[in-house]
Length: 256
Image (cartoon, rainbow, N blue to C red; front, side, top):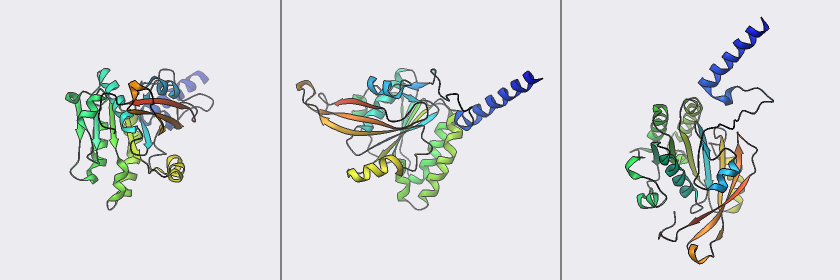
C-alpha cells in the first residue's frame, strides 16, 4: 500500500510538472536542474561554461540587460545562429524596428529561415509573442524590447498579462525565449535597474547583465571590445558567475 501511494504521488508530480513546468513543484533537497537540461549555445564558449548548462535553456525565458552597444544584440543573434545550426526555426520580434539584416548575417543568422516580426501596433506584441510560443514551431525567439509596452496606454496591464501567460506556455514549448532589455548609460541606474527594476525579473529563469569592459587593442581585433557578462539570476545554478567575451568587428563596419 505505501508503494502504491508513492507511485500515485510520483504520477501526480510528473503531471503537474508537464503542465506547469518544474518551477511549479519540486522536492526540496533535490535540484530542479538536470545535467540534461536542454539548452542552446550562446556561441561564446566561456559564457556557455559559466552558465553551467551549456547555453540558454529551452522552455524558459532569459533576459539580457545592458546599455546600447554593450553587445546584448550580438549575443542574441549568435544564439539564434546556433539554434539554426541545430535545425531550429527561429524568430526575432523587432519592436524598435532597428533590426539590421546585414549585421545578423555577419553574426551567422540565416535570413532565409528567420521569422522577423514587426507588429503594426506595439500593443499587438503580447498576443503575437504568446501565439508564436504556443505554436511549438520555434526553437528560439528573441524579443527586442518588450519594455516598450510601458510607453503606450494600458501598457503595464499588457506587460503583466504577458508575464502571467508566459510560464504556462513556455513549459510546453521547445523554444528558448530571450528578452532584450535596454538599460541607460548611467552607472547608478545600472546598479538599480540591472538587479531589481525589470518587470521581467520574476519570470526569467536566467538574467544576464552585459557591459563593455575594455576595447580590443590587438591589431587583428582593432575594432571591437571585451564585454563582461554577469549572471544575475539562474534557476539551474548559483548566480554570480561571470564570463568575458570578445565582440570583434574586424570585417564589419558598424557596431550594434
